[in-house]
Length: 299
Image 1 (cartoon, rainbow, N blue to C red):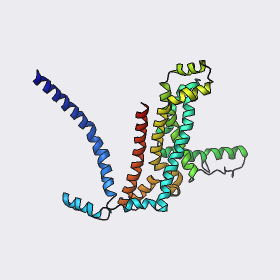
Image 2 (image 1 turned 180 degrees about the vertical axis):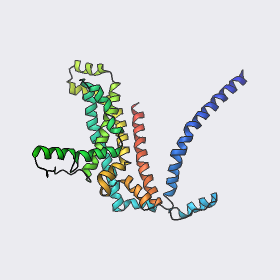
Image 3 (image 1 turned 45 degrees about the horizontal axis):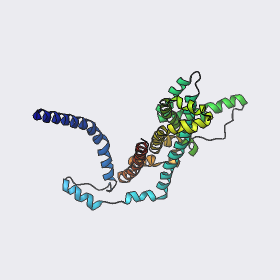
């Protein structure tokens, strides 16, 4: 009997170990290993040739170890790009969460013809590739875009153009980010609202609270997990975005993601690009860690 129990536990352990290996191996191969390679490259000048032997490589690493590539982030140009990264991410997160939360609550509370279809279509702007969003903004707001063309036709002035410039401006970059972030925020918060019992809202109104007060006191606190999740995703993705910044802002409003690309493929400085990559990865991982910590605290 004891032998059967022993073999049963051993079989269970082997199955668990096998499933762990199946799940962990791809993660280690495609996530942990690249991070370790980039981390190592950020400490060693890329113009040095590493030896082949294992112990020679360790000696080479310890001999040529340096933190100077991390110190370059304090150069005004790169510090400006670091600030752009945080400003774009912060403003996009705040505006997207505010508008997305209001939109999600409105669609949840107000049922009208087409409201379900509208709720399901919210995610479309998010899943559309970034460059298509940029092209759409160009087609609408450019000098020969739809808005200017319509105004020229309506005013009878073929030279009319709106004074507001969108392309290659700070607010143009932010506009596309927000257009990309609002649908995601509204979609995630709508999913949270769908799981909330409407009787809570009805009970609050029945006890004398106004609908607006019931939303602030009852509905909004219950959506906090969705708001935190949406904010974490939007902030992280905005920090790492390359396409929107390059196409809408060019190099004038570059963030760390743009600089990393330029250092890798333009200047061929693998060491400094790796250091910037480590900094950006550390920032995004910190955000996700804070998110999971907040969720565990509320659980």
